[in-house]
Amino acid sequence: MSLPLNEIETFLDFTAYELSISKNSISLETRFREIPSWSSLNALIYISRINEITNVLITSGDLSEIDNLGDIYKLIKERRNGDN
Amino acid sequence: MAITKHCGIKIKGIVNVIPALTEDNLLLPIIDEKERQKLVEHTGIRYRRISKLPVKYLFNKGIKEAMELTGWSNDDIDILICVTQTTELSIPSLACQLHGELDFNQQTICYDINSGCSGYVYGLQTIASLLSTLNSKKPRALLCCGDVSSHLLSPDDTSTQPIFSDAISVTAIEFDSNDNSVTARFNLETIGKGQRAIYTEMNSLNKKIMRLNGIDVFAYSVKYVPQNIISLIQSAEMHNEIPEAYVFHQANKLINDSIVRKLNLNIDKVPNTLNQFGNTASASIPITLCTRLNEINNWVLLSGFGVGFSVASALIKLSDFVPHKTIEI
Image: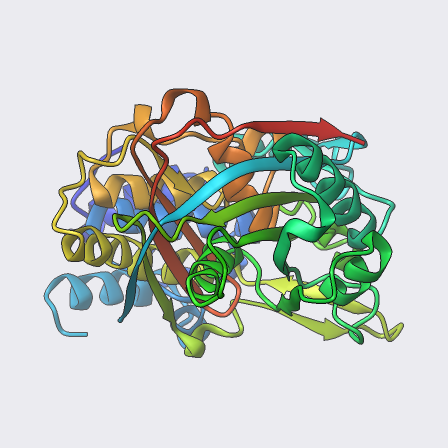
């Protein structure tokens, strides 16, 4: 699956696919740690796929400071734009 | 950036010692049965080796085999360095313990290097630096690398258990003072702010266990390893088509594939032993290198990265055939 992740819909499609969940069950307000399939392995796969597609690196420190999928989406947008 | 270059350094033999006892990640009870296939697919690791014996025993066996392979005698060894993080005794050094067991010459330089995944390259650079300073025509060294990482794992830790595997490797290295050509180049770097990516702590039973933050190991590896390699290749005034093989530390498939992608490497030049042997810390590079030694007769790139956070790459010229063997015990 290759998506630019620069639109909310494509980001949610991507997230649903990578975390093997229904897109209807998530939104930007979804707390990612509460997604049933969120495990150390799946989180690593998800972060590596974000890097593969966008070249954005997300660390565990970043994740510890944020809470929901919207925060991840914002992080990707900011870093792709060179804000961080 | 710590880039060094060395003349006359030659690898004369490699012996890998791998425990026969094997665990299968598809049968790993701490991982949900439905997740095991996904784990193997994304880490690239199906089998891991487990040693019930201490790392000293594996090194002892490897050294004896390496002496036989090269035809070297105890009196030939000027330097013995052990790269490990899983010694039973922290005092004295493992190199000194092995020196005593194997009855090496009093004139042998012996010490340990506390290093993991980048340790093979660090060990090679240390030995290359030392050998050229010795007052001898053809000084010789043995570099022992590896760990029994399984001894540091918590049985219920789903981050470390599927990844780490036990093995060691012994590399015989010689310096030819008559050879003025550059045969080894290194780029060693440290990113100490990544020290919590892999670390040990005491658990509630006062047992030392290893912890792994997979996301941070990924982030540090992908951020720093490609640039480390590019800097080394540029400093050698090469381009990335020249090395005949790129031998990476076998971390996991997600990390290694990302590095290969960022360097735009031909995957045929990148050997992989993750499936059979898992992540064997500082032994993973020589174990993987041995799968290509029969095909290489010029430059090879080696790159180790991990605990520290430490990144170390080398360009090594292998113009002569390097005898090698991998044994199971």
